[in-house]
Length: 483
Figure 1 (tube, rainbow, N blue to C red):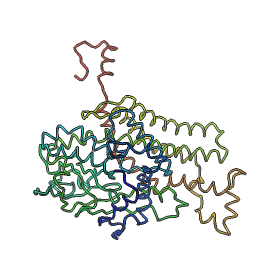
Figure 2: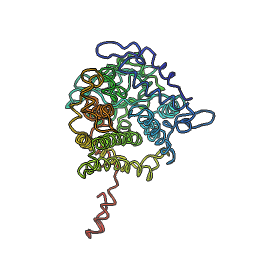
Figure 3: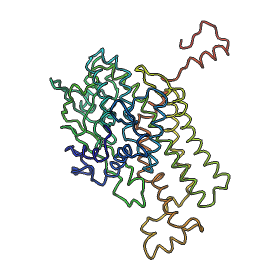
């Protein structure tokens, strides 16, 4: 049951409580800070209905038409189909949108892999997983992720400070559980629902804990309050900041003030073993579309830097080509990890096909850790005009236009307007407030760097290198890998 963009927008008009810069937002679909990115997500829905994209965006299951993005992967072709659909979508919108659902639904598939363990706790919880996974792709739900708590003083367990610093259960009722606390979430204000799961902390040494909670929260439910950061869209001229005014994905501190979670929306509760399993396997699928987005960011940096070199005639210089090659190596290294992770994909406990975990997580480390360096290389290639170019109004106003036409026109092929557009795009991609925000987001959107490295360590098979060195160094036969 594929939704249209307008049906998605209408679903957001549910009376949800959204606050931005001290004021309550009346209609999130029309507010200047949210409308551009909501339009982007709406476009994703609408493309699934258009004849030229429908086959790439949807598949048939019985009598239903469902989203390719939400189909649980069972064979390699499923991943290739997702790649094709993502490519069409990002090229159509002309930029990168990270939080649109396909990169968070994978967390639900990870839950499916732990279904048997959850069934041991309570068979209802396992049934809830099956139903919710089915519901997401049959109802085309915009599903996001709720991970990070405020946490407070991290040297203390939550019980020894304000207990709401991490989301917890405060009461059980016949209808469900009552939760309190808060989470930082991207896109929550304009999503349908979020998978709320714990940040494993000092409490995880216990067998049972009210903080060990995994559930679905409807973003318009009573008691859910979205306190959003100030947005970038609508604050500046889109001619000067073309990316910030289209692709700003607004984060919020989402407060859960005695929110009722019906039992049918609970996946696990109080069981710390389940919480630890979820945290350890959370990104086994969702890391793939997340890293894929960074490949497109690399493409934007390469394209921007190459256009600048061609405009200025510097593309023939060997030092410039070497820096461009550095960007290409970054891009192709990301692409190699993604390609290899599908080519050597592994079957999951639930029978799904998950990307090769070691290759995928290593690719994520490379993509995230090297992004600051690559952005700086791109800045160098764009040169000093990146930070000194006047805004669009100066290029279009009598008294300044003629001078800027004179000094920004490069030759018969490159006029001042094309030069201005490229500098504006490069500035927003590499040096603007929005660019800095996106860089920070990348470093923490799927946990901090040390967690990325821990995932690599835990997914890599050390037995091969150990056995190779055991034989090469003539270690005794009773030394076994892993001892």
